[in-house]
Image (cartoon, rainbow, N blue to C red):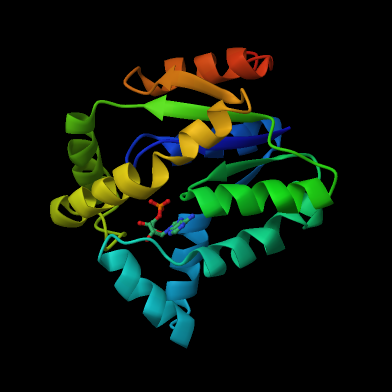
Length: 195
Ligand code: AMP
């Protein structure tokens, strides 16, 4: 099963994707984490990526499509994957469909975490506090830019998948456990047994 977890920055995509990996063995592919790993390597590419990410802008489609193309063909994605942070533009969505079609695979579900916009900047501020400022783009000013990039370039990805009847909406304002339960019921997977 191949899933896209979709939603604005701070919606909880990472939390829910990590859970789907841990409990159900779907490979969590976070493009933000991959880019941050490249930044941490301090390569030439990493330095360029850092300035784009710190400005709250999107990295170019060419770079992102190559990055994700390398991942989905890896053996650890054979049992399925959760895409977190990709696709973020319509050309990325089209490229994803093309590459999966060539592998005789497809996107099975697009789960949208819907969150009140006013809550997002607060959530990002909280994440910055809890992580000790691990992410240099987690501050109110950059968060606003990331949100405007989301509205302008990423939100139009939804109609693309809606046309294929793949989109299911989840209330991302619920407590984490309830969001997880809703996702599990949509995917038709059994919740883990409590001990
Ligand atoms: P995230 O951790 O998903 O919030 O991503 C952090 C940053 O990485 C974003 O603000 C973008 O600068 C960049 N990024 C991550 N995924 C993508 C993508 N699919 N397309 C373009 N830029 C991306």
